[in-house]
Length: 366
Image 1 (cartoon, rainbow, N blue to C red):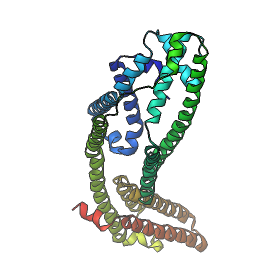
Image 2: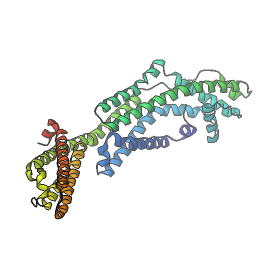
Image 3: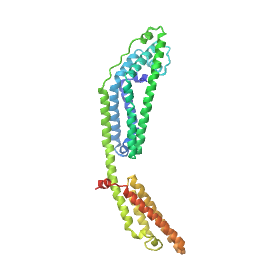
């Protein structure tokens, strides 16, 4: 627990850019899961600008919150070079006693500050932290009910991450307490006045300010609200229009299947009419329907219909090739049975495609 030596000694603008870079990396990882339309849209320069702008604003708000704490930690390390500052912060994290009295004194000061910040969080506040992973679990369950597996995994990941993070914080808090006591005991045994002076007295930290936290919440809500409007709702609107068009295509495929009575009679596959080219054109039309839809729930059925129609063409082609050698009645019946079986499956798949469209989806394309 406690900031690193670099974070304490770095200028404010360096911390700001570091926070912004981490935020941008996080957005790149979770953005496509929350807003798939963000990846599919073509305006990449504007999207990258949006990520950079939001990351910089969010990092600025975080910087406002944490700057008083960094300033307090910096005062605790006054007079030390950067390598000695790093030794002091490592001593707090690891519990190792530095041999240099000045570094030990600084480690006690930094450790005392860390304890003060940890002790400021009440038991009630520590308990309320667990509401966050609980909320993520509830969202994951709701998305599971709506069959959105992508978001289920995302929210489950958030829940597990924050649960593990809070467990780690509690463990580190107890560990830091032990380390600080060990450093104080070691400092008390060193006659150097600079070290001994840090073993007594209370540690004061800046009062907690509410408005920077409100600023972070506002920036976050604005950022995700704009993202939902630009890519989330756009995706939903586009999906709604695509589904309406796809439903009309599924209806057309069903009508086309019923319309061609000659293709539905397996007795005709041994005849010269309809010709083989008619069967091929019939199958080609189903491929056209399959390739013109984007909704996965409809596309999977129309793709199967196209595959089955190609099988029908293969059955006709095979039987008519054998008809030159006068196939036996058993061979004809076998081909007719295969044709009828595929035909029945075609009807089932087309009906499944139309069943995937609810009345609202059909009305959306009106």
